[in-house]
Amino acid sequence: RARGEATARGEAMFVPVGIKKLTNVAIVRYKSHGTRFEIACYKNTVLAYRSGFEKDLDNVLQSTQIYANVSKGVFAKDEDLINVFGTSDQEAICVIILQKGELQVSDKERKAETEHVFRDAVMTLVEKCVNPATNRPYPPGMIETALRDIHFSVDPKRSAKQQALEALPKLQEIFPIKRAAMRFKVNVRSDKAQELIDFIGENDGEIETNDVGSTEVSLTFTVDPAKYRAFDKFVKDVKGRLEVVTLAVMEEGTSSGTFDEDTMKSTVKQAELDKAEEALAKMEISRPVVARSAPDVQSRATQLETLSSDDANILVKRGPIAALPEDHESRRERFADIDKYQEGWEVELRAREGSSIVDAVFYSPEGDLCKTYADARRKAMAAAKS
Image (cartoon, rainbow, N blue to C red; front, side):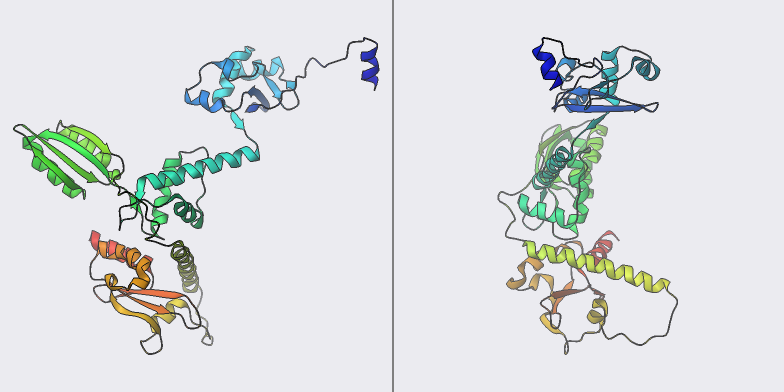
């Protein structure tokens, strides 16, 4: 009311000269020597400036004024600027804060950025990974479900591609997925052709074409993307030429019908149960032995070990993995990964008494019992490497 009366009388309103409020800004904060400095920027321009896409400060800064608190509109003191930066040139100080300061984002913005990186990670896996059985990509919805089931979380400050590929080993524990192979074309001198062919074989590559010329040989082949650096070095050493033809070799269509999400979710739960049982086993080993009565309820591992064909509700009798019936197609395709590493494995499906849960137990070519898919897969992989 007093301000209104003063205005009506034509008197000038008092506005503090040390305060200038800005709204709808992106704030970059820099702390040093116990003092906080802030600058006001336009939204979505700070990252563009740091990545080099935006070089004009006028398009980044709303003002070259250095603040102690942008939200309250409080300017930084000149003596603080000189004490910390050694100068009072505010434009120069703005550049330092832009480069070294921390971009402040709201919870809503942080959540949106995290979701954006998560979606990028999903699409990275869709574009670069396939079902080993069909060489087709999985649909985005299934990849997203799988990532959430393994409790995958992203860091908005890191590359989505890097984080997605780091999650791949965990995804491989719950359903069949692998990096799609890359297709390369290599030109080398004729006297280096056999050396190149041997190198491709050593790295599990598959040769598609082999064009032999009078002085040069051109090969097209596919190989795991992780081998790229090794081939790049090899080709440079033999003074050849390496060309990337296809970043991800895959068949058309998706693998949505080859592995159902219910099976995947049950696999995740089973993996968590297996880990819990392993942890309990370690605890039991570390405890002193105490005489006690036998428990009424046996663990799943003990049940599987002691069940015989007479007292177990066997759904599918022990036999080759490839012989699993069509009713268990998704399991057959998933378990086929074991035979890929070592042939001769057998599987038996058992229903738990009084439950709808189906357990799969595996027998190695030597007849050793493995109570989980993960154990069987690890044993087969170890046998393949030996």
